[in-house]
Length: 491
Image 1: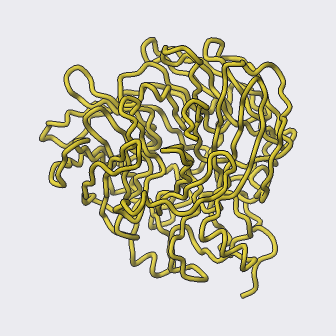
Image 2: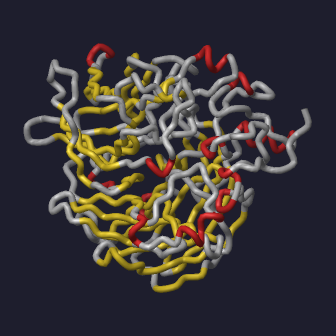
Image 3: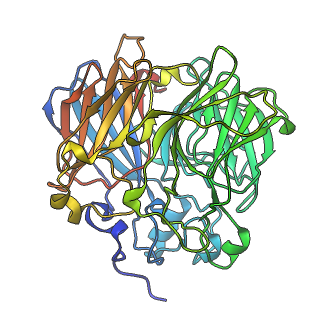
């Protein structure tokens, strides 16, 4: 079979989603407005961006090569670097000059056998002096925080007990430890979940092996002071389906939404409790904490429809994408309860929203401020003007929201009628310990110019941009990223 010479004629490869296939740097970016002088650090984010056309015609956005952006901000100025993670997949395909990886998370469809199939395309975090590029089906890849050079597969000097590592590790702001897990931890189609805690110096503190009630996707999870919570999506894996060349994931309308609850420290495998709620789709976690009664409070995105519509149920049923709504909801869970049925959650915010971020200094604790992407067509998006440029296969959000969980007041930033927003990050104001006092930074898609922009907001004046940084390139939709303050970078 000859290698394809162009990307498939599919929405996820067209318009703003046409692969960028670029690496490089820009030392001075154009700034409109003013970047406050107290901001000193780097915004790292990752996007799936295939370097070569796939041989799977309807390959999803999630399967592209991990490409890292680093936006360095200091003294009111901004610079930019872009570089691919040199995964085994990337390096071998570059040498072969053709795609070798098959379907998303299905090794039985590959053109060659890989030791590690990771695309390293889902999240990028800073830990113990290194950047870790994450994809939840494999160990991390370590990168140099300054050059973005790939240092290699990172197994924590051989301590990593599982074959997989979450794309959403959590960091305890009090202890500095990284709390992690891997699902399908013993390989594709296995129900095993491996939970572990890592000290700030990289030493593993604890490992607990669990068995989940279903082989489902556990994309995000939550941590409180004394517990960890594992939300399982009803997207399920079947090994025989994989061997027959099928999809890794299939929506299961009969499967409930499970939440595993495990003591954070000193747990045994039999200590886990699998609570359940009616069939629904859990997305990203905002935060979790323990209330005065010892209940676990879990704030999480929830939809009554299959958000990953490109992986339908066994009969091929999937929701129409524009009909999908996710809302921030709050579950209250008694970890000592023998009743494993969850009560209906409270709706914290009624708008269609996702990609929640908080002031990370308040992670695992009671908190007040939540920032997120939201979609409200009434704000004035000019859909007729931009529809032909949108591309497809990714969620659309036209504004940034700020929810005050104490007053339930919502503030909205609308970047413009031809713009969509990507995931934001929160930057604390230097010298301030007040929760939510700082800045919000997000990459924004401008479909009129077909280029990308950074929009910087002051949380004290949320509805207008403090600065807009123009990029001379288009960066397709990314997944996750994080702000790393210069004070937190080890030499």
